[in-house]
Amino acid sequence: MRYGIIDNLKQSDGNNGLKNLFARIKKTGLEFLINKHSDYSSESGFDVVEKGELISLSDVIIVLGGDGTMLDAANNCAQTGKPFIGVNYGKLGFLADVKESDIVRRIEMIEKGEYFIEERIMLTASYGEEKISALNDIVLDRGYSQRVLKISVDINGKFFTTYTSDGLIISTPTGSTAYNMSAHGPIVQPGVPAFIITPMSPHALAMRPIVIPDHSEITITARSSYKEMILSGDGQSSINIPSFSKIKVKKAPYKAKFIKFNDSDYYHLLREKLGWGGFKERVTK
Image 1 (tube, one colour):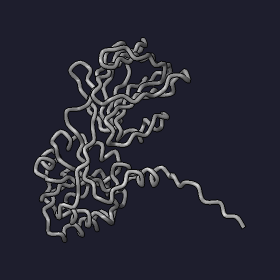
Image 2 (tube, one colour):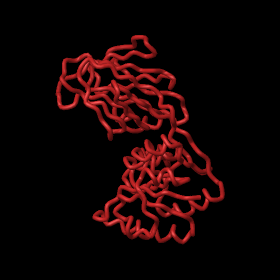
Image 3 (cartoon, rainbow, N blue to C red):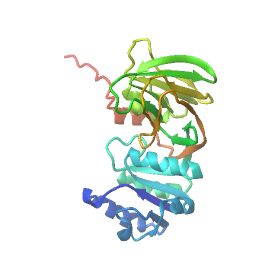
Image 4 (tube, rainbow, N blue to C red):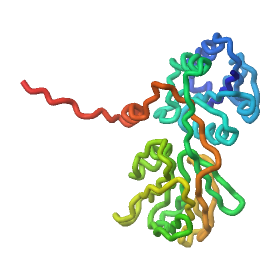
């Protein structure tokens, strides 16, 4: 099995552990490729190729970095059907949930077939000929304006509501713990076939998030006289949107394929990353 390595880590950040990691995984005797644009490509000891070629030639993609690096890799890997695993070098690590110290053991487990693929639904948003895909969320916001937006939402061709808010988030279950959660939307387990529509800072208490089936097609129309708003996918790719434009959002025809193991535990991940310590038992004397 051939492994491709993608990272977004800079040598200026002093990642000495990464050099040690490369030395350790090289001892496995397996075949590795590394992204040409990695700061570590020349000293990794691995064959160096462009990212697109790396994804095409590899059986498994190893992503080194934070969740932002994972989101970028997920979009590329999903469209080619390649499975990937994330090693956390960022802060939170919801998506890149493997520790650096554990990656060699995980590679050995992959070689033995001791893993499974967890497929995650993705979104596409289209405006005219332009299209954005996202693993976490599609967001329409007011850009540089300080005025609120009036955003009309249709679901499967039927009018749903008009939100008056700073913007709108359409999230997958994977993205429910990202921007959606910050905007007080619900957390949804990744396996649930659903989308979440969440207004950003709505100007009425009754304007609440809603969870809808993932086979729905959502049409967004910003009914505000702004010259330009911003439509973005996963906070990375973006399109400038003029007022009264219609945006279509629906499930992507491909899925992100996460490599998971029998000891993977989503609920433990929530407790750990969100600091859900629970209540300690009261001790009485």
